[in-house]
Length: 381
Image 1 (cartoon, one colour):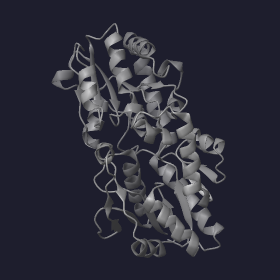
Image 2: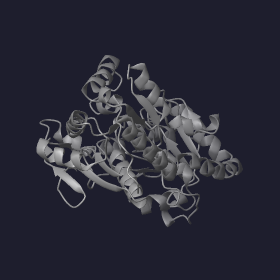
Image 3: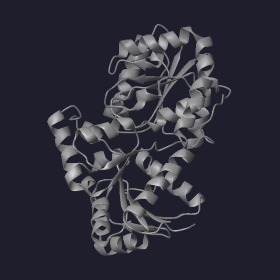
Image 4: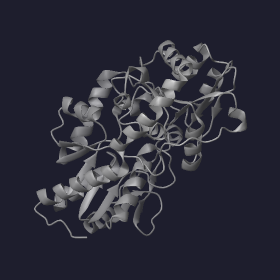
C-alpha cells in the first residue's frame, strides 16, 4: 500500500505523537509498504513539508511542549493525498483537516486517530478540569474532523469509551501505539556511581501540569526512606523550573534530564521502581516502556488516564493526586524487595500485549478495511 501519514510535526520532536508516527512509518516500510509524510517543516524525499504557523502569545508555550502547527497549502496537500492508496490523519489540526477534506471529496480512503485529549490541551493553561470547556472541545473536534471518518484509531479502551460518550459515531479501533520489545525488554544494568546505595525511582515523560510530577516529588519528601531515594525525572517541559524549586529539601538532589532512547533504556535497567503520576493519558507509552524493561510500576488511578490498565494488582495503583498514598505505596515496595523481584518479570511479560508488531498488524487491518469499504482493491505487496 501507499500510505500517507498526516500530522503537524514529524521532524526532531520528542512528543509521544511524533514518536508514534516514526514507529508506525518505520515498521510499515519494513513490511514492504510505501509510506510518506505530510507535516510542517522542510520538504525532502518521502515528505511533503508545510510552512510553520506561529501562534501569537502562545508560541512559546506550544514550543515548550515540543509542538508546532503547519500552514495548509491546498495544492501541495492534493499532491500528497492523490499519491496515496490511503490517508491516515494522526492529528485533528489544520493539516489533518485539509487532508481529510480532500480525501473525502475525491473518494480516497481515509482514517483518523485520536491521540490528543482535550484535557491535555487545556491543562497547559490551567483549564484541564473545566468540564464545560472540555466537553465543548470533544464536541467541536467531532464536528471539525472526526465525523468524516468511518474508522478512528483509539490507543486505549478508555479514550474509545470517552468518544462514544460524547456522541462519536465512527467505528473505534482500539489499537495500542505499541512499544518495541526488542528495545524495551527485561534487563538489569550495574548502577552508576551516583546511584550506589540508593533506591532509584524514575518517572519519564513531559514535565507538564497534567503529568503531575509534583505529586511524586512530594511523595518522596513524605517517604520514610527519603534519605535512600534518588528521584530521576526523565523528560523536559515547561514545569522544569517549578519542579526544581519544589524538590529543594530532598535529601538526595533531584535529577532531571531528557534522555535519548539508548540512555533511557540504561536508566530503566538501573532503576528500582517506576512511578506514573499523570492525571491525563490516552495510553502512557513511557509507563509501558518502563514495565516492559522489568520495572514494577505505581500508577495513578485517574479516571482520565488509561495507564492504570497496566497494573497487575492494587499494590501498583495509588489514589490520583494523593502524595501520601503514593508515599505509602513506594515505602511498601522498598520494604518488600523479594516481592518486587518476583513481580518484575511478570510485568515485563505482560508487555507482549502492547508490542509494536501486534499494533502494526492491527493498523494494516484497519487500512485494508477502509480501502475495501470505499470499494477499492487492496494493493498487493
